[in-house]
Image (cartoon, rainbow, N blue to C red; front, side, top):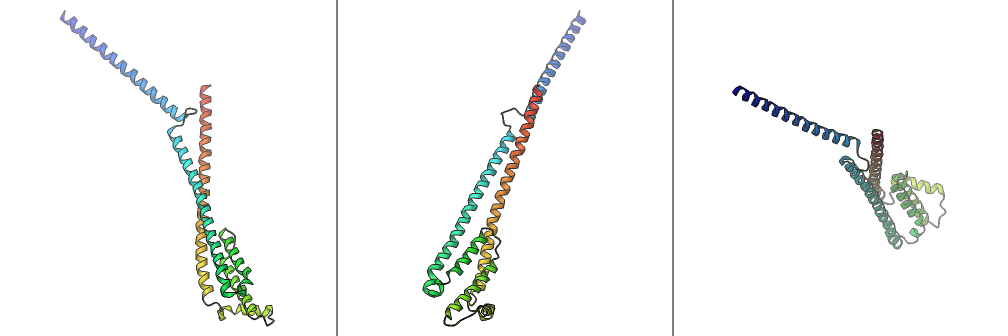
Length: 232
């Protein structure tokens, strides 16, 4: 009788052990199924629902677009500011020179206005050599001032050309042409380089943003195609 009871208890323990093992396998299968479903859902994507990576990419794209717009606005403000300074300089020149030079200045205002026109063209990106523009300005100014100061004499173009060639030896304006050339060249080269750098950086940001947008749209189209194929 005792052997029978011992055998029965051993049988019950074995059945309980089998039941526990079966429940563990079922739970593991359910967990594995949920994981596979989550992986598939994350890799394929649910239409109309953005994954975390897509949301981050969209935020990055929007931030790049905002930076691009901000860069263009700052570039426009800087351009307007520097042009305003240039216009102010020309206005001060027109107000201060007439009392000093009188008719010598009023008769030669075109020489000064042409110089400022060349400086504006250079700053806006035109192919202008600042040193040549300044040399031309001083040569024309010397010829006109010399001719105006000697109006009683008939001075030909050959004589004026000779005077212009001897300007470095005669130095009628002292060290002003050399000092002005150094200051203007450094200032305008640095300003234009800075503005061009802003423009190029804005274009780079814009192109990168457009490239990210095209790639994101392409991946979304591929995922939608896979979803339709899976439904079929």
